[in-house]
Amino acid sequence: MLQRNLNKNITSLKYLSRCYSSSINEHSNLKPNLDRKPEIFQLDHVQQRLSYTVPFMFRQKLDFTFYHKSVILDDKIWNTKKYGLQSAISYISNISIIGQLLFPHIHTEVVSIVPILDDGTIRLRWRICYITWSSLFLNLKYFNYEYRMKNLKWYDGLSIFTVDGDGLVYHVTLQKTNEETKILKEPIENIKSKIEKAFGTTNSVHYKTLNNKTDSRKI
View 1 (cartoon, rainbow, N blue to C red):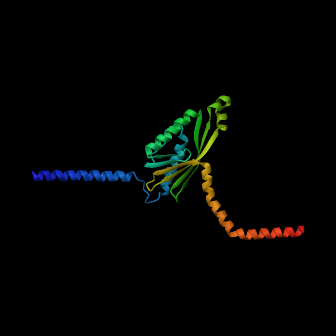
View 2 (spheres, one colour):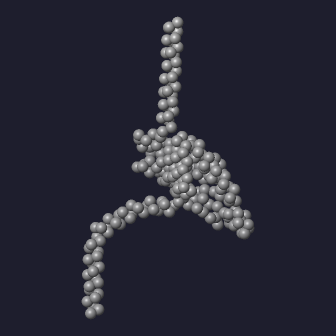
View 3 (cartoon, rainbow, N blue to C red):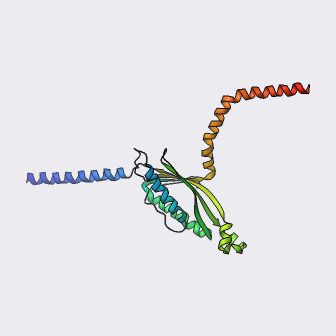
């Protein structure tokens, strides 16, 4: 009797340990691999998938196979954050549906896509080309495909995809292109400030001497 109870306890402990270990593995899979940076071939894979799928933004479902399950979508255009892959998929799907309803013609173009190995990111500049319903009814030339494609309005934006060590995107940032120019201008402004600090005194002295010369000539 005691032997049977002991065997039951042992089997139950084994079962609990298996459940516990599986729960740990599932929990670890929910976390992105930040112990190492992504390899260049992993960034190239994400770059190729984005360049292929982004133009189908408002036409069909996008490819989310290279996204992490706990991806964070930070939309700075609408000041919205989404946590988790399913939440991000539904958010992008809603944008696609709303865009198709609000605009008679809308499509997305890839302006540039650059992988950066140093920080493990891929910077995608995109452009949404569209016409409004009012423009369509006020100008019937928009029914002509060639005329419409040459006279589309557009909206430019920047997406930054951060990739983990397993080659999965775990963070996405959406923002306007003016924020990108701000990012690009920051190091330039730092260089300018350093140059001004280094040569600012000499320039001021040179400027004063020039003013003194012009004043003496006037006298």
